[in-house]
Length: 254
Length: 276
Image (cartoon, rainbow over all chains, first blue to last red; front, side, top):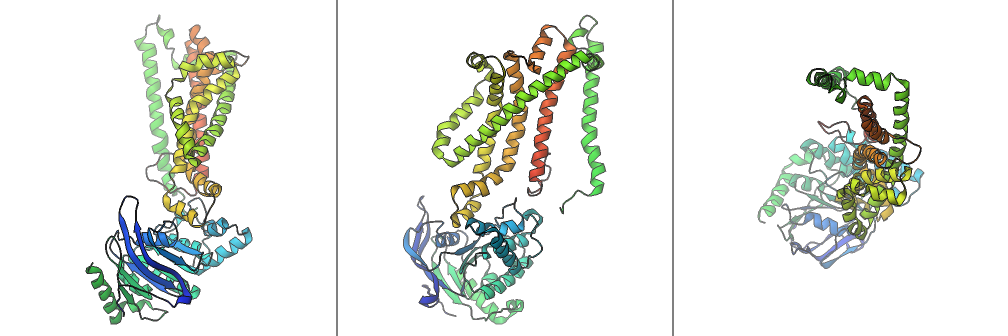
């Protein structure tokens, strides 16, 4: 359980993305992030926890080039990055199948291949048989699964999650956490996962980063030693509680 | 799909959707009879003939009915053509505005201005320029009905949430892909709202046009209304008003049905929402 303010992860050759002293100031003068440095490698699940408005979402937007960096730099070893928002952002006029086909379609992949990719992705999240449903007929948890399947079609080696389960009830959230880990183990992608929930962070991650309030900066890094696959019972182990309270204490110091 | 109305809801729905408007119709007819037969004396009665007199004169005398039906056909033609052109041109303008800021900034004030200009005021000028027949009537119809198409389409295209745009930006979608796969389908509910509003206005436009431009062989309802008014044929005047409302209602219902058909499967059901 290491605790250092500046964090580096993964050996240099497997690094998918490196944040090097990255700061962000918005045009209106708001300082969102202040000198953030960390990296994520293959098979690494990095979770970022921090108070509301500490620039966590901005971190992901910069990682995916949706927002430019003000100072410092981000090195990406991969082009193909999956991004799952808090909102499922499904197109309501498309069926589940057609929603999952969206990204391959945007990349000009032929129809038959799109259908194959979508079917494989839907199977990964356990949604086979729902192809012809429209999003409005689905529950919040199922919509999130479709959203995840949509990002899985292109098999990105790096995934960004912006509080994807924040709006779901506790039970659904825990179940989706377990399913996400199953997919994570099978696919072996690198992950940056934003959350408010310390339980979720510790359960999912190989490493938890704690951020300070705005302007956000990394004030703590916790290695999570539990091996995968992780059973739901892990949440009730004393080691789990110890680690969770350590993260909580770090958050409280902010 | 899943959310079919439960059966018991239908009988209840019939009571709540059919009975109240029927009561309204009865009340209006009652008031009409009251004014016609009680308030007005025999010398004044021609100003508001009783409902059965209107029905008798307009619907049971073939010559009158034929005249009205032919007029309704002519007016429908002007309305449908004008409305189709308004939809086509209006959507093209709205799409261009959504794609190019400068285009919106350059032309939107004039789209508003067209709406603010009382069309009646420029109708005589249109007649002088275009002649007093069919084309002029269609032009008036377009001018009166195009504004809601432009504003609603533009509103729909621009009201797509930024998350969805991010989705397309992440995958480097081109402008045309974004327009075709995201903005246009997403704008459909607003676009259909524009169609329904414009349907009623299109009928107004066609009748105003016919009222002013009476050239050509075709005799639309607007022209008939002017004739009946001049001849004090109030029964036929009332029937003419009835036919023009019928045309507006038919178009409104048609667009509502089309929009329900297209949107029913994906639009989230909103509680307390009206049909469409």
